[in-house]
Length: 236
Image (cartoon, rainbow, N blue to C red; front, top):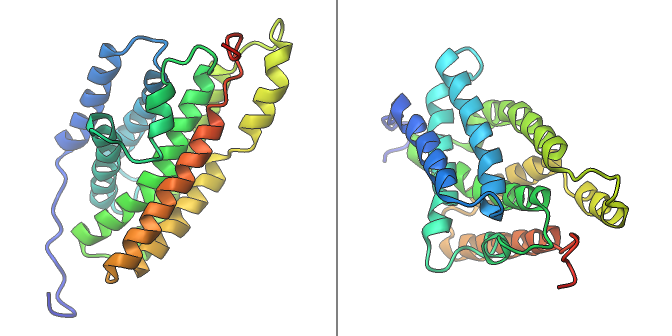
């Protein structure tokens, strides 16, 4: 494309975002409640429903079409990982340990958030910028508006899924220590930094691949740590 010629911006019909919500609901209906993927997908569905409601209401995002496109590309990475013969490294801990009896639901939920935000989100930002013909700076404002939605859901996840401390004192201290090491705000900041870095490497395919692979591996390591067995059957 010649410099200075703006590409046509493909619209995202409302039903595309609604289709993501429907796919997540279908996924959850097919999963047993003890499945770790269900713990994350429940939280992710809440985020997506909230985002869809804000898009429908209008006035929250500066560029709702761009946000919707990013949302569809972002969700697609999670859904593709579930269907992949070999999932990205960041998703393997959750998929491999999803039924481990010693891993608590809150760990599964935050592990999924870690994989999706730290790895999938920066790649989705780059994908969206390519499709929309814009730079990450042009998405920055709305990207950070999503932080408020994510922070609300993370708080709900922790409150809903944290085990009652009474009677579980052996679990509580290591669990609180482990989970306090992960923050959604830091994850989003890191995701944005990664997106900007990858964008700068977009015309250098080998450098881009190396950076993306390193991001995948590093995110997978954190995901594995978040799934350290802590429950009553953790030694089994």
